Image (cartoon, rainbow, N blue to C red; front, side, top):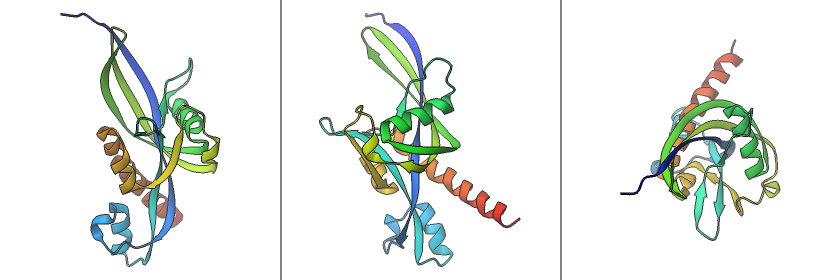
Length: 178
């Protein structure tokens, strides 16, 4: 029986979103919960959530941007820095979404890794300015992004991000009415 050294590792990343004006989908199965809520209110045009994924064309991998802390960084700072480096976008942190835990073995060491994800709004920058860690960086409508992701636990984070965004938008509406 092989014995492995054990290490705990932490990283942070996020779901970078933008809201795009689109015509209501005719197929309710193609709509997200966010779209359906707006349609129920009678909206012809709805705001659809689009998210950024990073990818590697040689392996077909698609993922959420994330990375490892540098000494002295908070997880929020890691998420913002890594997302900006990997996507080329300037972002604003809105909320914590949730975490993913998994393990893997590398060089006789078993790593137990936890990745904390944050909801980040794209406020500037350009996808063409991303670093070279990934060779593909693209916007996708939420349902398409969920299908593209290589790891199912990241798709779960996207659905949590949609719920978090709905709560944030509702809060903004209520604050605007006061």
